[in-house]
Length: 206
Ligand SMILES: [Zn+2]
Image (tube, rainbow, N blue to C red; front, side, top):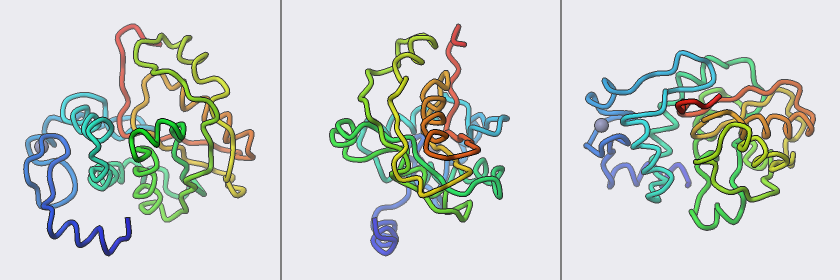
């Protein structure tokens, strides 16, 4: 969306907390949700999946609430700044076009823009292509997830980026990010960093 339209929309549509939909005055979680979220201690994630973070991601991905990308992207800013100076371009982990068409937007691409802005580097929205549509990973083990996403990505328009930061909304076992990292390296990236909004830990998952 054009920044002017975005600004206009913010005037007419009051900001809402992405976790509980209470009205708020600046981008991010409300006080209550902020006290319930668990910031991630590792470099590759902004939060631990759960509570208001999980609710926000669910609204963002499955309820058509693409505008929440502004608040969620702002919440990734602090984590992104840990990588300042280490990356040349930000690349979202892409959805397959069929899934993007069904949803109407690509959630990782929407998060990649504010992250790239925070880091002052370009975003390569089409740096990778999802060449294979893969079934949902939800009920799969780590091994099955690895097989599921193997060869799912191909480098596309990385434009010679050497140090790439891959962005996704959720990381569970890391199988998807591993496959996307391999594709980035096949496309000429020397270093690949990854950052997700939330790292999810499953019982028994490796
Ligand atoms: Zn809230």
